[in-house]
Image (cartoon, rainbow, N blue to C red; front, side, top):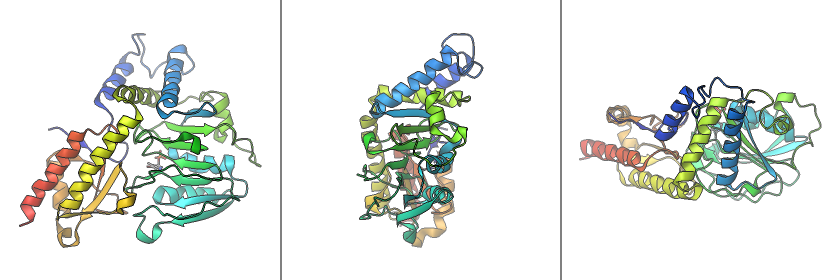
Length: 357
Ligand SMILES: *Cc1c(COP(=O)(O)O)cnc(C)c1O
């Protein structure tokens, strides 16, 4: 049976990306060696790194005064690397969910943290509005897509201080004006490749201001100076990221992807709003186009387990919601075809026919 992979992360990759990676695992470009067994400093892997960086720059329209890095450690390591490198006295954070809270916790180890706004009062089901970004801080940190709660900041804020964004789960899903940001980072495993690679896009003027010793591995300048080759980078995950970006370019780039993502999200949200069994958890003006969270309406709560089992029996994988929201979460990342979203809608309608008289 065909599986429809709605997992939140690690998550769906395009079939041709998986196939091309499998080929490179056996033999990279006919050189008679696996991409896993060659030196990261040799010309064959250097070509992979160079193309991946070039595709990042081209597809995201990254201005020349930015660096693109590939590191280990996941997005979670950036929660400490950002304040290590940028926080002298005070930083501002927007608290929009679990990942934002984890970033805030780390920053507090380095200085004062001003949480300018929070949606904790409603279990993070909306993006705060009307807050003012303070001007006396070293930077302002946001989480553009809240993977667990299904809310998303779909605009690029004008910030009077360097803007830092965790874009783990929405990078390459929509057009972003990179020039508004000082740092954008994320784990690859949501929209780009397998777990293991972390991307960092960083403007060159914001470094060198920290008033502390920074351990070599946690200093962005180390990795900038060595082109992400200070130590061994996650070679195979980077290779797969390159294949994903080739695929994305062939499809027409980020703007085309954004239209496709919006269409998929609209389809599913319309069904959630129409179907008497379900209700969406995020406020409508904060809804994510990547992670779509919904629950059973109160009067149908008892059917939750049955729906999960029914959906699973029809090939729907990974739609159980995170424990902090409950219910269901359908992640509709770039690689998720529209047909899979339609298949989930069909399942929701079939379940409705069984249970709503
Ligand atoms: C998954 C996720 C993380 C954590 O990423 P790791 O690579 O596992 O550290 C951080 N932020 C957001 C928004 C995420 O979705």
